[in-house]
Length: 353
Image 1 (cartoon, rainbow, N blue to C red):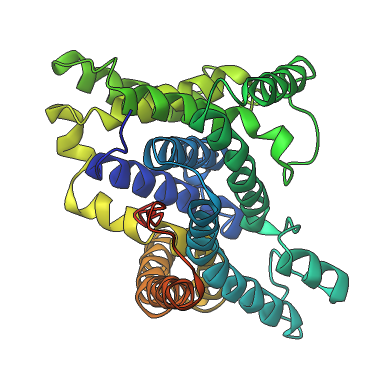
Image 2: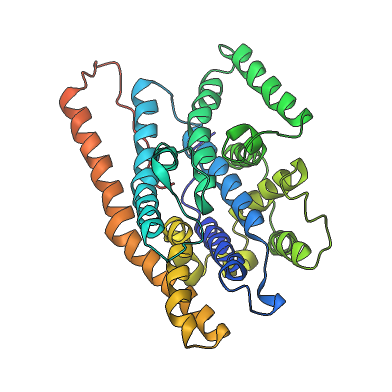
């Protein structure tokens, strides 16, 4: 098994998911608009995000030797990737919540709620999906440990498998901010990532591209057209479907790649986390201003564009530079303090996820 190369189509898939989360919140902010503005597909988009995370962790890290240095590098990279811009977004919402008369739509009030969100246990607005993501990063260390030496850690692997199976029997219960309720989406992605990195199954031909786009379209259109149960979106079937979509997308067949690896979707994929975190406050403020004197559809289009512009600045001014500085700072710290024996090569982890 080998770590996978960068896959452009996965950037586009992430971009589609982020954009669909944005449009799914239009009805929340502009409830007076016609019903066809109500695209209630945000949950399916987040499911894709979760499966993507599992896929990337498995394909990027599972083939690497696991030791203390590698595990610490991994956690530093994950923290630097997620937490700084997340904290800025939380503080922005706290400030909006304090403005008298503004009535921010997803407020964070009081010291308890603020601390819950700062310590990754909050559930206001889109922030609910970040805690299970972080929890999965820690859980994946155990998966990585099992994969590093299957014979030595076979009892741990069995224990983890039993825990997930019991969780499935009880239909993945618990609050949405806790990993047990979402573990099946991450693990579906892990399975897809391991299969992809192994190289044992690489379907080819135009049917792969057609299947990729058709399955992706079905997941979202079937919800819009009410072809499936509106309340069964977080089940095991959807987790497997999300894993299959990510696996097929990673094949980069020319037909699906032509769409998913296109420049606009890859750009949205690059800024997707900032777009996900900041689109509601930006669109809310746009609604409070532009919505007062512009027709509803025009105000919606402009607010979505402003959310993309704000996310672009957030990525280039906060998300990417802070991540780079934290990672580089950690590397300098490790170089100064680590004592590396001649027989022990230094661990190195890619930061492309």
